[in-house]
Image (cartoon, rainbow over all chains, first blue to last red; front, side):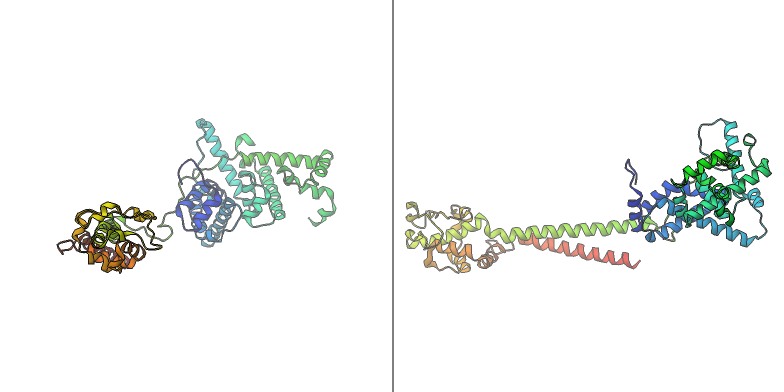
Length: 199
Length: 267
């Protein structure tokens, strides 16, 4: 799979269906940042996001024969979102009294921010912003969080979000509206939720 | 919320986010924009919504902290230790290659052996023996029988008797052209040998022998079997010896290959 020519997703899926692990790993490398990013935003914890992303790729490889058509990236993100949902359920079952803030305080680690050549203060500001946004997102119910993350952080259209979340476009529209309403109310009530520069 | 369906403001207010995301239907967007122009509350909601959207979109992109490539171990397929299997694999492949080469060489030698009767030397032998017999009777009998395929006649030199090489008839076919002038040594082979296998009668002369030779491959093979398997001294020829040796090598290599392959499978 090395070389200057990148095979299409369809070709890699076809080879993966024949059990070609190298072909599937090419898909993994192509979409692992998108999958990990979604897991991190949905779970709020880098170690949990790593586990969920890895499990998602494992599940995807085992289920690749059932992938018929459509966007393989959206299919992978859907599997990852379901994995995150299951992980949150498991966590809640283990410790029903666990609050979101406790989860954040216990597990929130440094988010991997790509090196963009920024100065140290700018990087610190970016890290602070990322953590504030993460705290905001974790206040939302899972479905609303998923819709907002995919829309505002990943930039997907409603149709794609509907495909990833397995909901109708109307439901996606409603989830995004309710999620943003809730975030707006939270920010108005507690400006500390925002970084200083954004208050 | 249900009342909102009957109140244009409430219904349009719920479309603020779809408007900001560019997801309003083409027919709804102009109506929403005309409402915004006259509704301060909705305009303020759009402004706040835009700020929030900008804030969320400013979240830095996240990169995967490590590779999530799958390994056979992850899939529950333990990786096979390649080191002990390699010498065995090499032995299997070597035996396989040896068997293939020996079989190919055997086929090549067998082909040479089987087509050996077609060689000029063999034909010379046959021709010379036939010519010797026929020339003893009358060289003029070299004239072909009707439909015999020969257009030429014996040269005067051929009429000189058995001591001188008989003249060759000129065959029409290319194959007969290859049957060159017989050598003196070819006459050492008894005439019966060449003719008995071909089934031609001595009376038919050389031309008859030629016709029978060309038309009867079975007879050709029988004749070759008599002439090529043993040398003039009656021993096993070099070609036949090579066949035996190569057949032995091929059988040994095939048996080795099968044995090693069977062992590999049973592991």
